[in-house]
Image 1 (tube, helix red, strand yellow):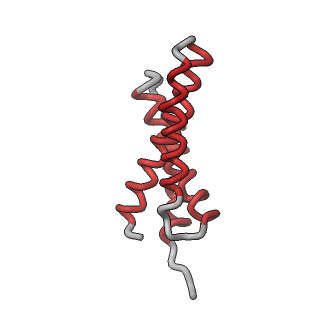
Image 2 (cartoon, rainbow, N blue to C red):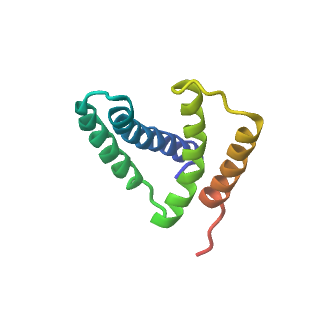
Length: 110
């Protein structure tokens, strides 16, 4: 799979997972409507389906996806929760994205 397409798919997958977990959190922690569980379930189903679109071995996909998830979660922290990440947070994201790139795009023999 092309690097841009892979990264875009990982980004979409991460957003689906975060939304699917954030909506129940709003219900449980902030007393929001239980109806939020309906779009949360749909978002988590979308997340699971998106993971199946990768042609690589499942374990490798999950490992590489984890790096992108960390980056998206930090952006979510900043944009949705209003907490600005610090330099160490961004360094951690850089390290995880380097790991993701190695796992996802390294040449594979045979």
